[in-house]
Image 1: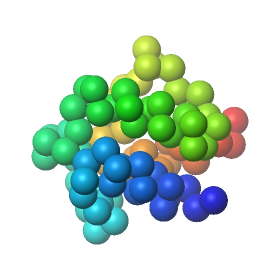
Image 2 (image 1 turned 120 degrees about the vertical axis):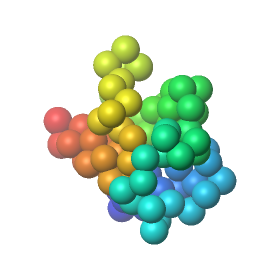
Image 3 (image 1 turned 135 degrees about the vertical axis):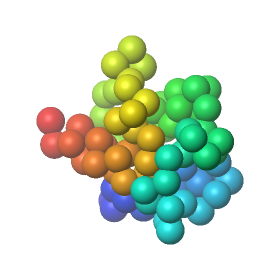
Length: 79
């Protein structure tokens, strides 16, 4: 599975937006995601990619753009 496309699919489901041309846009600052959506995103990422991301360890600054999310998922997949 392509990690980037999988992440974009999840973000599209959550935001209703195609973010493929906004990979460095802050999804929280631009109002596309809030704290509830971030929890749903983490749950979806964990399910789709079989990774573990405890909500208590979630640092929004590390997950605030699609590119950062892809990088975090890829790093967690390799653990």
